[in-house]
Length: 237
Length: 297
Image (cartoon, rainbow over all chains, first blue to last red; front, side, top):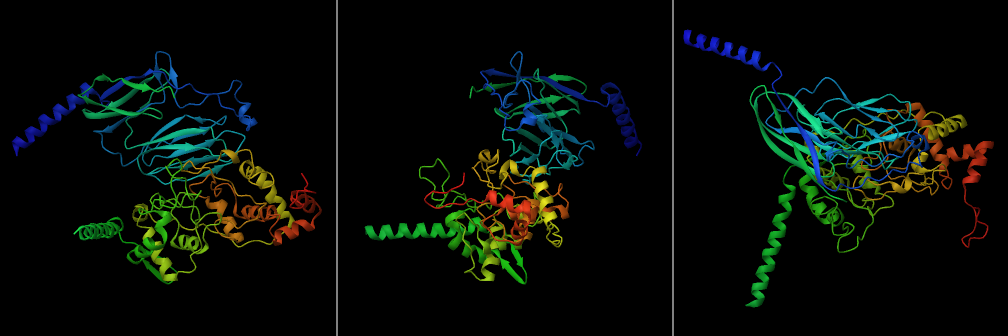
C-alpha cells in the first residue's frame, strides 16, 4: 500500500509539474499551404439573372474553386487531424454558421465537427435553396426565402459535402464535417494554426476542393510549436 | 469431346452466375409492412432479378443494361437514370426532407409508376409480390438498417376552396420565388430552369404545369401539398416545410391547380368564374391549330 501511495504521489507531482511547464494548452502546429504550377484562372460570375445580387458586387466576383494569395499561398484548405486524436462524442456547444450574401457562400468552406450545430443564414433579398449533396450523410434540400429566420441542421457522419443552390447555379461551397475539433482553414496568406494539441502522434490531412488531399505525420511532445507545410500541385484546368 | 468441354464451361458459368446472385443480396434480411401485408426480402430477391434488374441493375445502383451512363460506348437506351437504391435517396415521400420514405411511399410509387420515365405501373403483380420487392430493395442501402423512416408530415384537412385562397396562393408563388424555376405561368421556363441538374449532375426539368400531365408523386391535392412540403430529394426541388404555414400551403395548392390550364379542376373552374382569373387563364391558354395558323404568340 505505502509504495502504491508513493507512486501516486510521485505521479501527482510529475503531472502537476508537467501542467505547470506545458500549461493546459499543449502543443501547436502551424504552417503554410502553397501551390506549385499554374492554378486554374477563376472566371467572373455573371449574376445578371439575379439583379438583387448583381447590384451587391460593383465588380463581378469570380468563381472560388482555387483561391490564391501572394507568394503562391493557397487559401480555403482544410487542415485537420485525421488520425491520433479521439473522435469527439460531444460536439462543441457553439454553432458554426454559413451566410448567403450577394449570392455567395460566406465562408466558402465551413468546417464543423460531427453533430455540431450548423446555422444557415440568408442575408439576401432573394430566395435560396440550401442543397448539400451528401453521399454518406443524408441528402436534404431546404428553401430559405428572404426574411426567414436562420435554421439549424447537423450532420452525424464525417464527410466533405459539396453544397449548392439550385436557383443560383454558380453558388458552390463545402461543408467539411470532421471527427474532432483539431482543424483549421488556411487563410488568404496560406497560413494555418492548430492550437492546444496534447502530446501524441498525429496524422495531419490537408484537403483542397480542386486538388484533393495529402497527409503528413507529426509528433507533438509537450509545449512546442511544430511547423508543417503543405505544397499542392496546381493544375491549369 | 469439344462439345462436352463447351458444355462444362457453360455449366460452370451458369453455376457462377447463380451463386453470384445471393452473394449480393444475402448481406441483410429485410421486411416491409404494407397495411396487413408483410413483405420478405428473400422472396423479393427472386422477383427483383426477374422484373427489375434490367433497369435498376444487378447491384440495384440504377446501372442496368437498359441504362448506360452518358459517354459510355453505347448511347443510353433511356434518358432518365433508373433509381439508384444504393444511394437511398428518394423523391416521392411523405416524410420530411433528408429522411427515408415509408414502406407505403415506396409501394405507392411501384403501383403508380413514374410518369415521363420508363418506370411502369406494376399493378400486374400481387400485393404480396410488391411488398416482397419493397423489402428487397431496402437491402441495397445500409441506411435502412441504421435509420428509421421519418414520421410522415401532417397534412391538415383541405379548407374550403375560395377565390381569395387562390389569390393568396398566387402571392405566395411570387413571394417564395417558385417562378425562378417553374416560370411565371408555370411552364417550367423560369430563369434558372435551363441550368438545373439533379444530384447525379444529370439535367432535369422543372414541372410544366401548363401541360397538365400527372404529377410524379401522385395526382391528388394532398399529393401536391406533400411535394413542396417534403421536397423531392435528389432533385433541385427543396422542402418549404419551414417557411409555409399549413393553411398557406393549401392556398398555394389551389393556385397551382389554376396553372394547369389544360387540366379540368374545381380550382380552375372557380378561378375562371372571376373576372381577374378568367383574364389570366385566357392569356395563358395557347389556342390555334396544328398547322400553326391562328396561334397566339
